[in-house]
Length: 317
Ligand code: A2P
Image (cartoon, rainbow, N blue to C red):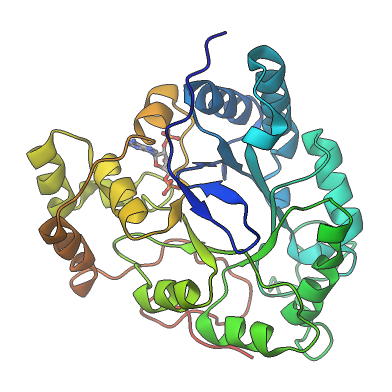
């Protein structure tokens, strides 16, 4: 099998490791879809795959990674694999990661992220609910996201995760985490929803200043890719003869973030890793979109009001 050498640019994590700037997102890629998308992506030159315990696809994702390594001769050390610790698994991240690794058929992940800064009641499935339908969350005083993070730190010395990081945090939460005396390992990455309707520039700048790489999930607006209908994006795409997706992904790369477009279609998977240079005027035009449309697409009903009405994160304790 001929495997194109990857031309995807990388960023350096605060661990010294390199992370490919474009990775394949796999949320909502189920069994065979997930397997086929990951295999197509790796054959096409992707070297970065992002999955999570709660996506329910670690097994097919891992199978595709292992089949690809066998078929291509590409080494595990040439790949960057991320999974995420789910909110019910906060007390024993080691056991949770070992279960993930077993499903993935891997010895380690390159990055383990805490999926959300909250803890849900364990032992009642992945999405426990109270009788009234609300989510069964643990009070912050009982167990905080900082406790979870501290329990993740030893996983690096155990060689189960090369790096650890966080997801869905806002600035106050990162500040609280970094200020805690028990936090000895700086998060390598923050993964959040990021796209032209939700650029979160302040958060991106804050992380840059603290040497934390920011990863963009749902860069096209998640299901149905609503951002692809945006006029400004399409005008720029027409100017360069590229798709709206290429414009958004190139914008994400140009602003120094990692970007994780999800697709199960091999043609779209392949085209999503092609990056074009954007002019300063293009960047300004894309950065300006949020002045007229500001929107968050991923708003889970955790039962905690963690977003402002305009869709932006608001501080919670
Ligand atoms: P599909 O998986 O059928 O390609 P996000 O990355 O923001 O989560 O967006 C995922 C959505 O965008 C999915 O519905 C996916 O559909 C679609 N998508 C991904 N890449 C492209 C593309 N290049 N053109 C059109 N739609 C795309």
